[in-house]
Amino acid sequence: MSNPLNPIVAVTLMNAREVLERSTQQLVLFQFWSARSAACQQLSPVLEKIVQQYPQQLCLAKVDCDQEQDLAMQFGVQSLPTVMMIKNGQPVDGFAGVESEQQILQRLSAYLPKAEDELIAKAQQLLAAGQAAEAYPLLSEALTLAPERVEIKLWLADTAITLGQLTQAEKLLAEIRLADQDAQYKAILAKLELAQQATNTPEIQALEARLAAMPDDKQLKEQLAVQYQAVLRSEEALALLLQILQQDLNFAQSKKLYLDILAALPKGDALASQYRRKLYALLY
Image (cartoon, one colour):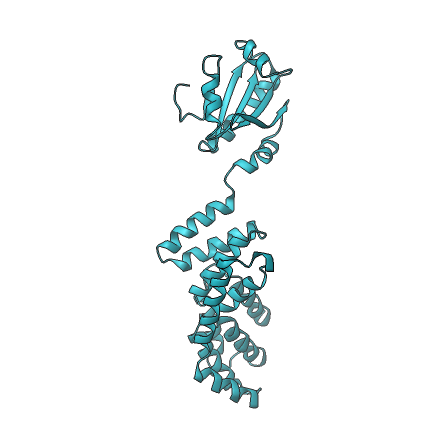
């Protein structure tokens, strides 16, 4: 094996053991082929393209069966092309004949980095650098790709708390099943409860009491929305402002406040999309 970093290697009896040892670090695809086979000629560029996209995870070990008949016999190859997928020295999958790129990638999916994992890695780097607003949309996208992954929900909820998006964090935590409520979940829940206590200011409590007594007072609603947004209770602020705009599109500063809150929400926030659609429905 001339270059240990080369994702494509030619296998002979002399280096077969060395290539097998590589399977402790990567998934090795043993491709048994012949230049005389049209099917082999069709499959080879597909395999080469895939392994070149994932050189850290995959190695294509090409066995020319015209030259290495003994090696093909040792592997029990009965037809060409044949692909054997070897991990830790043991076959884990394989196929005979030609498969499409999509079919092969499906077979390899357990061994390749998932799109959401790449997004999570980038988000964690941003969080470590204190860039929660930039990390938030990456985690949101990761959760869209893998909604069943509890750890993504927890990271997104934690980031939402950091950004003051407490309602979003509360919704995410409410989706966590009892069996998954581990120490990390409890720590984030405690962080949320502390943040919620800090946002329930005396000014807000007083305005809420006045609005309860005069529920149709648009001026009170606008004042309370301003106070909500001051402590980043964005969803409650938008809901109040929307009530005002549904009655009077030009009332005081309500439309400007509404748009300012939307602009301040993290990129990719579902709340922004939801309330932007509600405003467009009113306007158009």
